[in-house]
Amino acid sequence: MQPPENNLKIIEDSLLARIARWKLKSANVAMVLGKTIHLSGVSKENFLRDSAWVAHELVHVRQFQEHGCLKFLWLYLVESIKKGYYHNKYEVEARMAGVKESLLAEQKPEPPPPPTV
Ligand SMILES: [Zn+2]
Image (cartoon, rainbow, N blue to C red; front, top):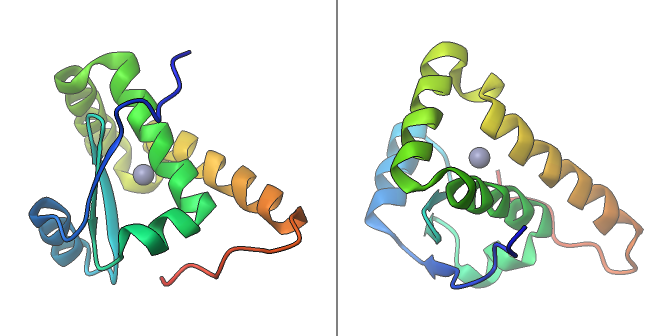
């Protein structure tokens, strides 16, 4: 498996993420498109400090790489329509990576700051 960090880009105050944030009525949003993480309501610095959140989004980066950009968008959309956001298998996988990361982070001497949502 290719490390997903390769050529990874992070865009702060992204218009796309701002639209998603407004739609989801969320205080902050990170969304992945291809190899780019779009942020809104959170700085790159604070996002990177939240290792569980980063782990979650990196799973999506990997999913994009595995399936190809357009195909993954399609698969994700179909999953979302069938199962909704929470039970979408791509979200379940990403969420598990986030949970695993936060459990690991708890064992470290300096835990990351709590998520802002
Ligand atoms: Zn997700």
